[in-house]
Length: 185
Image 1 (cartoon, rainbow, N blue to C red):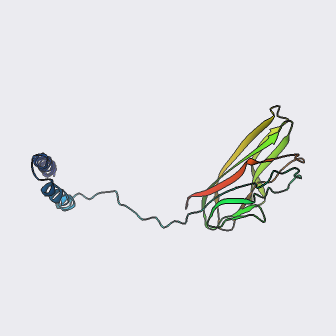
Image 2 (image 1 turned 90 degrees about the vertical axis):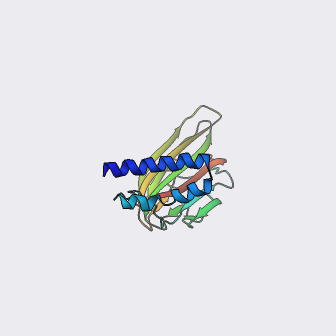
Image 3 (image 1 turned 90 degrees about the horizontal axis):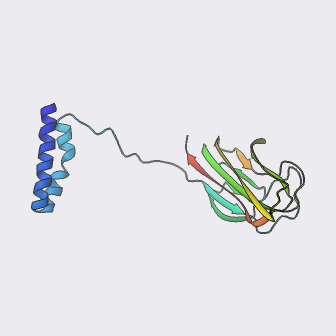
């Protein structure tokens, strides 16, 4: 088997040399037969191209207007939809519902004024999984970001409420939520 492999490699190199010096079309024609040559010596490629049958799910939403007051446990309802592939995000509830099983990634960012106390959590099916906090910040404006990667079943929901005390102000231009499915498994 080793001798046959050397012969095949040698012939391939010879063909490549001839192709550089002669007609390229004959080289291409001979090279296309590599699969047959490999099968003749008992070697099969281990890598196959597989077609994925996957559903694309992705959304990006932000606020149309700034929020002047938000109560404890109030869900932030991002009402400006930029993308909603898979129709998982609902502007009426502020919740994303997984249209298919998979692993999802969610990111949210919010901006507040000086002195703000904001706790925006990442909730899945009623349970807070991730916390983000802005506590008595001293800059005129400041923003913070949260992220969550989690396996969800079809019908599971994700949302971002204010999980602590009342918030005085959240800026619309710099406050958004996005999510997308990264895997079927």
